[in-house]
View 1: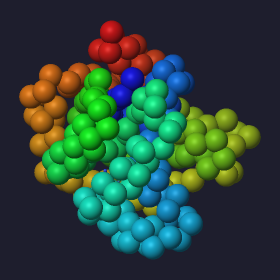
View 2 (view 1 turned 60 degrees about the vertical axis):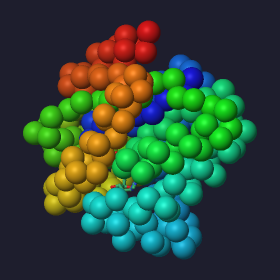
View 3 (view 1 turned 90 degrees about the vertical axis):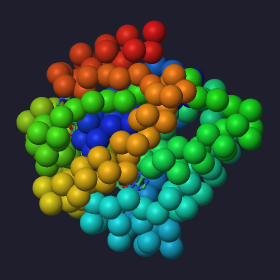
View 4 (view 1 turned 30 degrees about the vertical axis):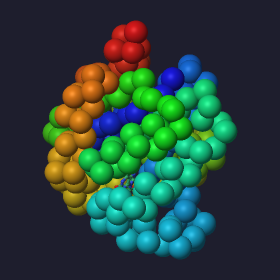
Length: 208
Ligand code: ADP
Ligand code: ADP
């Protein structure tokens, strides 16, 4: 199963992707997670990406595309993959199509997780992640157990100001990817509003 997850920041892509990759036994490839790991490791790519991420702006296409191409060449992608947060621009979508076609692979589905802007800021500002397990929590909607509370991370781009910039980037730069996939019949729209179990059920139905 070769899948892509598209949706605004905070739509629940990471939360749902974690469940899907368990089910399909495929790697979860999150470009945001890859950039955060590069920032943490202090690599030259991490240093460059950090400038954009802090401001809620997209990292330049050539940087992202190179990183994803390399990742998709790894043998663990043979049974498929779940791309989360990529492609985020039309050139990224075109580069992905080319890279896959070059090794005779094709996408099976593109999931678009739809959540209105009005709900996004609250989801993002309350998000906390566990650096040890990768688990995603929300202070109100998915409260963390007391035992892990002290080690949780609040991402520095999960502020109201940065999320507004990320929403602008989503509407201006990522939204044009939707007609690209609609045109080739791969797009599946899923309502991302409601409790996470309900969203998981809607995704399963969309993939069936
Ligand atoms: P994305 O990967 O799309 O940015 P996340 O999966 O990290 O989104 O979710 C963003 C925040 O919203 C997290 O704090 C998460 O716990 C919370 N969240 C995820 N799904 C839902 C949902 N269906 N309802 C309410 N909150 C949710
Ligand atoms: P969220 O789902 O909460 O918006 P991500 O973790 O997917 O956040 O991405 C965090 C940041 O990493 C983005 O705001 C952007 O700066 C950078 N980034 C991640 N994926 C891409 C991409 N495909 N193209 C450009 N920048 C990206």
